Image 1: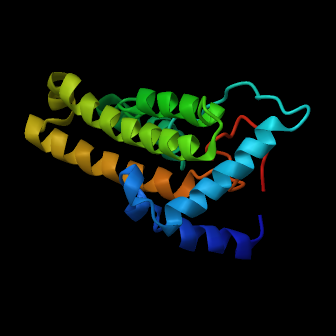
Image 2 (image 1 turned 90 degrees about the vertical axis):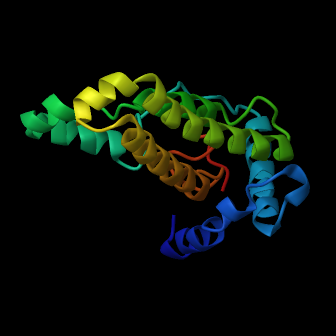
Image 3 (image 1 turned 135 degrees about the vertical axis):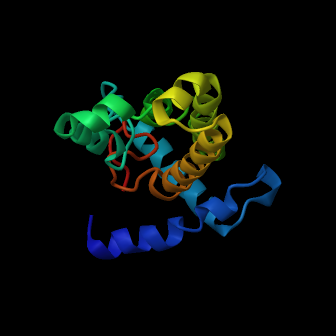
Length: 184
């Protein structure tokens, strides 16, 4: 992808989180994303288009790979923080949704399916803080309230990141519908 094309995506998609509201509140950025969902629908319907085998990197943006590298390099980190982020299973579930790009190929349905997948990711990370609270309190030496506050902050940044960087047809390996052929 050219730097200019990437730059346009960054500028346009950086506003997507503001457009991620109820269906009746669709704005310009949401409509632009729906246009990209149309491109994905066309790519999915082309002769010979096949869904590739599922792959995952855990948590995208280097989160899982950097976490693993640090855990391998620093035994003290591994012993206190673990070998993977505690919410990595949430990321893998999110990747399953992103891989197929929604069951309904209609562009508007795709937009809302992606928004739902991103919200589910956010909720899942927050639920890890609640369901694993006792173990995390021991692991981190922090109160349940502190853990929930930290995980809420992390989950909100993850939501923002996937809203900005996960649109279909972006050329990025973690885009919505990444299991289908690229749909520039």
